View 1 (cartoon, rainbow, N blue to C red):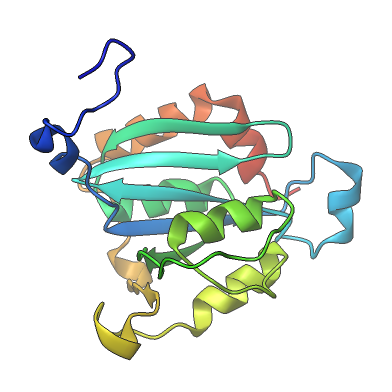
View 2 (cartoon, rainbow, N blue to C red):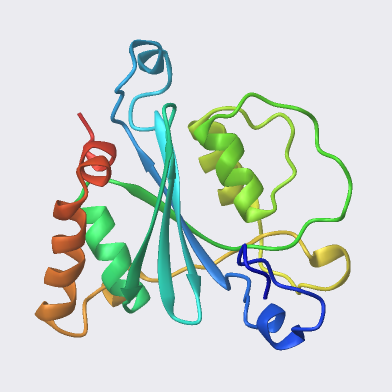
Length: 189
């Protein structure tokens, strides 16, 4: 490793520790902090993503004035979904993929564009959170190889979304309460 903290070529073990996320929760909210966002469909004015890699959840929220990222910790999927639904978010489960190496069209930096890039989604005409919500709902399960390598929605029956214990749900709620941006983002009105 160099003095700047960069990884050199002679350290292959360090490169292999970076693991792509195996699951993502895309959350949609109706909170409009900017006046022009009120032009968007109610309930779908902002989106952000939760990424899971090696059991750890990463909260990634691209906002207009800055991007907030934080590690939430190890929680079961049902606990995360229940906590964010309780906060007023609409959720879509997706398995991120690595897109082909080709340039994408230049777009304005919006929450939708940032989430699409994190997920590896190449849909040039998906511009609003509502369009992204509908687009993610259209993808069907398939293999990661071949033509079926599109995004895969993960489905969970609503009755299975229960925490393993009350403690898990309370810890996620504490995280939500500790971050003002998350609480503002997840409020419906």
